[in-house]
Length: 459
Image (cartoon, rainbow, N blue to C red; front, side, top):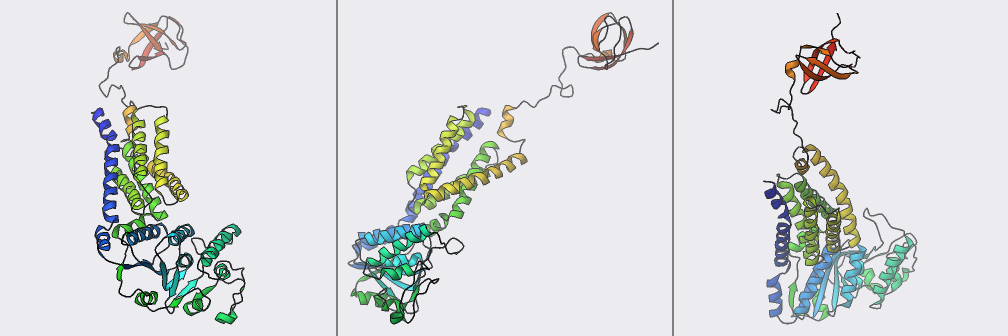
């Protein structure tokens, strides 16, 4: 019976590996729009239209990489990025900007609404910028998650330099780019746009202002007008949209969501190991980890090596429960598990922080759950809780209940233990603490198992 339980628990590792492989396979099927790729290979010269209408983060980065890959395979003549975003993470914007500028396909950024913050940086890395009437570009100051301006000189200096370098790529005034980031920069622009950039302000340009200062090459109402301005009339237009898997993955790689998934994964699997029999915690744990790797795989961050490392870590932790290794397997398993999770993340530091937070919260959940189910835990297999009581049917080798109430004579002094003669038998007895001399009459007051308590009979 115990062997079967061990086998069931040890089989959890290959089950998790199979589940992870299945999820990765599904991710691959959903993440690669095969029909769209085939269609792209069957058409002639084309213009690829790619939306940038979401927060700038790791999900957008992987989507754009996929879109450009399709455009390259189709030998597209041009890529038009339809930009309408309030920005996002600096690190992802930097990666996207460098990716666009290094790509061999000419790119035009069409600002359809707002190219704010990281969106401005992405637009500046394109070969051309075209803006729709009423749209704006700029306000690229670095802010934290709550929208508060970050005034760290090192951070501001880095982002100012990045913006200026991107502006100079296509001959734009780099001081205007600096004014979009640093509120301490002042700039005389009154002769061009009717106003100066004053200290304490962050520069934002309208479509007409951007064209006047050379930050926009043209003003257009629609993508079709942009295509006409580019001289690409008659080309096949291919609109690339995020797949269902990419939309799901974009949500799953959110730092808050991935931390919750790690909490549920760790707590679920550990609870199933410590308090077996429920089934639900184990299923929730495997599904949570599966969703974590699914999101990061589709987003292009997790490879099979991270999944394998993770599963090896879980397997080693399970084996540690049954095979004493002085903690070696546990340490190796923990290291493999953490490494698998960290290298799967878009940002290793963010992933590391997430797993640390998840471990702390998971330990709290596990502790509460174990206390609520302390009688069902695996540790009960190693603790002897049976008591050899008479009520349970256990009898001592020399039960002396029959001596209760009998009288005898002390053979030795009782100090307080000694020997008494009762019915011709020598019996080892004790008193309740008092001293009784030899040759005194005593009476048995209590007899429990081999424990006989007597009291002197006072004449």
